[in-house]
Length: 45
Length: 472
Image 1 (cartoon, rainbow over the protein chains, first blue to last red):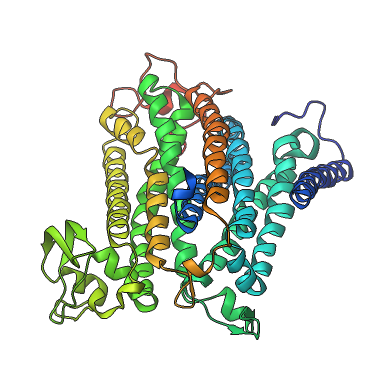
Image 2 (image 1 turned 30 degrees about the vertical axis):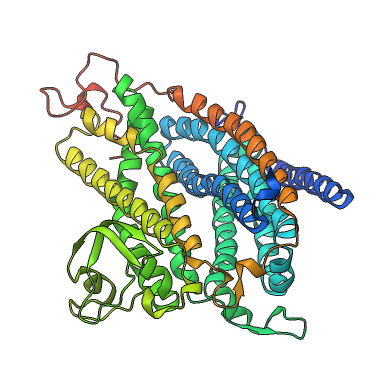
């Protein structure tokens, strides 16, 4: 889950920032899909 | 069978049951998010592997507690619509935006950065990962900020007007958000979350110390937790006292119920330690009390007058026995937490923090105490607010949806069954995780070697590159 090691040296900052933004956005999208599903389910009920 | 019950009572039981299940998870995750940020910060600052190992140990537990908190929280907003539609309609213009801010905090700070925190270390590097951990910790605080602002407004409403439809409408947002009881409630709850987490972490550390007193991870977490207990427990008592004085000013009937003061005391009121409140007769049976001490605590004078419930219309009395006893449970546990902190300071002074088994057993026994105290505190404040949802303005009986008892009762039965199954499994899994010893890259001292400076060999001579007790 969490790995503090960085074999072969750290990747460049721009790549780490891109990963940061991508994981953050993916998390938001994942939660958004769950929330939208719940909203649809409740409205249907 | 369910038609024999009162729909309002069933709706109240349902809300009480679901909110009691819910609050234990935020109480844990608010404190644990900050603890994880401290652990990762210490790892970055010192480079010591033990802090990263503890971070890895607790982040799995945090993820589960966080998920259960989110799921159980969703049910609360669901009930606002189903069982409390009149309340939602009347207070929606004021409380709706505040709850939306809470959702935004949870969405964009907690949940978003949690993904980076759980899965991003190898991709984003330690410093950006630490930033994500800090954002999650700050997000949990902001969530607490908005929810407690909502709750506090229901206790001490201000900054509103009432429109032609009988709804509360906002007139001054600053007054609404920073209503009179909000700062006290926020400080009291956030400190409670930190204390609850420190007691859990301390209990886990003590549990593993009882099995292996050389485990460096167990030593570090136990030491950190005992520092927190020793510092935060007295601060929490001071914060609780200030909150009580604020409640006396704005919700005196609640304090009368907490104190068991059915009668007014013009020449100084006693502090009732124990007794059996008899609401029908308006007295406390078999009371054990200390004369004038309640006046000293609440009014800072032995002979200061204190009004009793005899000055309040009976139809506005809260259920006194529940408030009276839940308050005593909270205070009693708070005193035991203080005792644990003091004992840990004594053990630290005697350099026996990792060797004193009675202290470890005491810490293990106190592991759930924070959760029980949080529940008792919330029962005190919420039952003490009755018979109102918006204090003095909207009665609980006038807030409920026009539902039949079987409709509310069947969903209550479903909630009870599902909650015990789903959250029971989650809690069992957390217990399974904490039963495992912290897995360390740095193993600490091998059994059989000197472990403290009280012996002949100084600990640092065993390994001169590091100190033995990093968190002390």
